[in-house]
Length: 230
Image: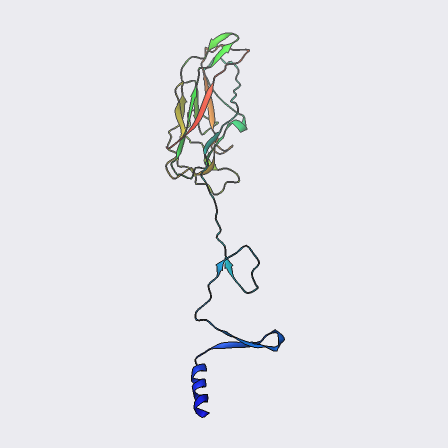
């Protein structure tokens, strides 16, 4: 009998378990496994309190486009003085444009402009010269070499401010010329070019002394485009 008890004790001794009184008064034991239990994938059904499961969270984030929001029109007003004049567009809303680089590529971009000659129908006349229109970052002087300010658009504070290398003033002709550019890895996000009172976009028209006053106004077709890469 003593020998039997010693055998039982040797067999039971290494087992580690937790015993509990189950429903109906029946006792039972649960043997603890080695190591830490691993969470399993959440099954889509309720899990018991104290049990963990894991989900995989996936964010789908795709590239957007490169866009330009330009003024809807440009306008100038002048009175004949018999002298050469440089006339600037004084409408605040027309002294800026927005480039939104939502591509995330960091390739950079540049804005180009071309303009047809200013012509009048009443009387029939054309402003002389092929560089009648020009632009810079000033509404005070056509000759200013200041660049328009490039800053994050309101509500887009996380943009990357552009690095512009264009030389001003820029003479705008019938062939597209660059009026603003950005280096690679700059100009990301929504950028407002030209801020009223702080290097706004100056759109300047040169009126020669011999320009003929017009009741219909002088009209030019101004074409803007944003192009990827500096």
